[in-house]
Each structure stands twice: as C-alpha cells, then as structure tokens.
Image 1: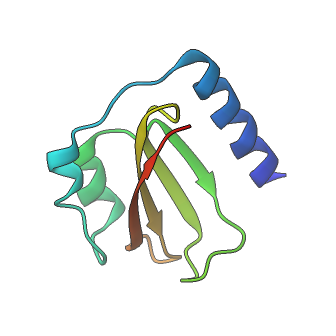
Image 2: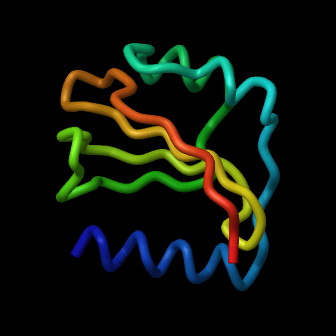
Length: 91
C-alpha cells in the first residue's frame, strides 16, 4: 500500500511539476546525518515515503526536486540516520 501511495504521489508530481532543489546543499548531505540535519540543510522534502525493500535496509525515502527533471533522494535507516543518497535524472 505504501509503495502504491508513493507511485501515486510521483504520478501527481510528474503531472504537475515540482519545485527544484539546491544541488550544492544536496552534495553536503551524507551517510550518518540525522533527519533534522537534512531538513535544516534542504528544507522540508517535496515527497516522503516508507520503503519496504532496500539493499541497505533503509526504511524511509525523502525526495527533493521535480520527478520530470532531476531529483535528490535521501534514504534513512530505522534510527533516523541517512543510509544512502542518490541523484536521479527525470524522465
């Protein structure tokens, strides 16, 4: 159900476009940082979702940016610490 909700959010965001993000600030985000540190640097995420299967056992994903362009993904572990970050190019 969570993954379906995330797909719906992405579909709506793709249709409507979304805000951009600051790539320079995003490059300062790294493994081990807390949710509060990420929020202080990047602001409120544009989308949030729980992750069910992740190779690094991350349980939550924050997305910054417009899915039709470039996005910055921040994944958190169950302790609320960054366990993975990625930049992705939109469709």
